[in-house]
Image (cartoon, rainbow, N blue to C red; front, top):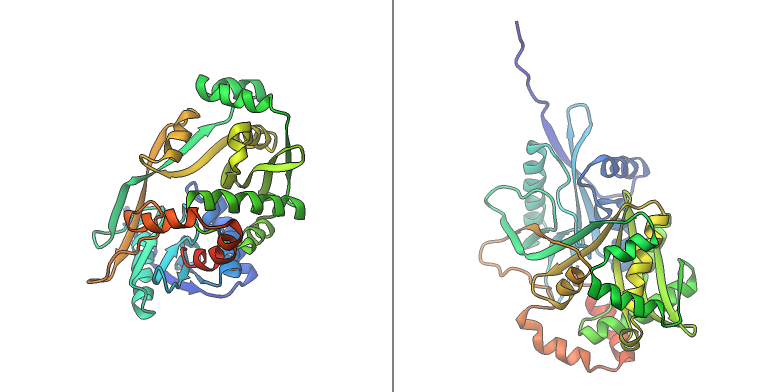
Length: 357
């Protein structure tokens, strides 16, 4: 006689302290999960909290034997300018519920919303993962991801780049530029100098330098900085994350002079080769909004856009939180920020950017 299989019940509990054994369990779960990302990892969650002052929580879904069936990292974002929200994960382009158990997925979503209601957060943002039930808004067609396999060697990598973009990389290779990789104080200082100028030029406030330092320290060997220099001066620089044989150039930028020298083009080509030498097989160019210059730039490299799917839930009668600098409501602010002296932007920017989440 066949016995009917009864699935084990799943319960959700909240982790709000960095208990080493619990964090190790989460790290192992993320590493084993096919959909796990760097933004699910404790290194990311704790680094953001330390640098920007936002509390964190992990929602843990466990079966009757105490075995993890799913997780949901959350940052409790507070901002006088941008409002309050539970975000998974804060300052990330990924996160959300990590589980392949339908019961755990719904329970994690429900518990996140209950937590939001108890603590007066009008919205919850899940930046990836499965979309819960119909009470959540399914957001797609706004952002695209760009991922491609790395080639077997430097020459093959160059030939894998479409002809027009390959010509730009070749110009960079001929421009007496040098590449440096590291995580030391000089690497960090040069990266922040370049990145701060780059985002000012785009019209957005720069994140606190401590955010980059905390991420580098938290990720250890799974993060580094690649900088392109001309006559000893940094022209372009990128802080990258490494996860499951994939490299993601996460915070990158270049100076105005970098354009003339094609330093940005050389930077990404050099990172592809560096990542392969580290054992990576995949290059994740991150997300970009459809129709933007960054979207077109990544397509020029031969990457095919893949639509990303997010989920949000907002309390009845509350406006949806909008922190997208491409939003029409911020057009005037972006134009003003682009005209700020760099020193002023660098003093004010981190105070504002902490609240973006």
